[in-house]
Amino acid sequence: ILAASGLTTFNTAATLALSGDLTITGNDITNTTLNLGGGSAATIGTTSNADLTLSPNGTGKVGIFASSPLATLDLRANSGTLAIASVSGSTSFAALLVDNTGSGDLFTASKSGKTHFVINNAGTVNIGATSGSRQLNLAASGIPNTSAGIETTFYGSGNTRLDMRHAGGTIEL
Image (tube, rainbow, N blue to C red; front, side):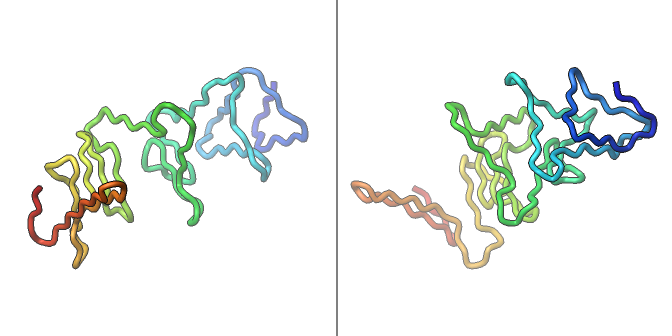
C-alpha cells in the first residue's frame, strides 16, 4: 500500500507492478496527468486479449491532440504531412462501420467548415450539393466557369464512355 498526503511525484527505477485497479483520487484531480514512456514510446495494453475501454465520466469526451474535444472522439493532426487517421486491416467485414441510429448524416467531408461531400441518413450522396432529390446529387455551385458533371470511362472491349456535363441546361437520358 502506497499512501502519502501531499505526494506530488513518485519516482522509481524499478517496475511498479499492480494487481487490481489503480485509482487516483483526491480533492482536486481535475488537472491530473499520467505520463508514460519517459520520452520514448509507451504502450497502454491489456493481457489475455481483453478489451481496453476509455470511459469519460458523464458527458465527457476523448481528445487525441485536442485539448477541448468537440465530439465524443476528437482526433486532431499534429503534423501537416501525415494523415489525421488511418484505418487498415485484413477482414471479411467492412474496414470502417458507420451506424447512426439518430437523424444526422452518416458522413460529411468539409474543408475549413465548407461542406463538400455528404452521405445522409437515407443513403443519398451529395457532392458539392447540400441536398438533392436523387440518390446521387452533383453541384459545382460557387465555382465560376465550371460545370457539374459525371465522367465514366471504360476502355475495355467496346470502348464505352459516358460523359455528361451541365452548363446551364438539362441533360436527361
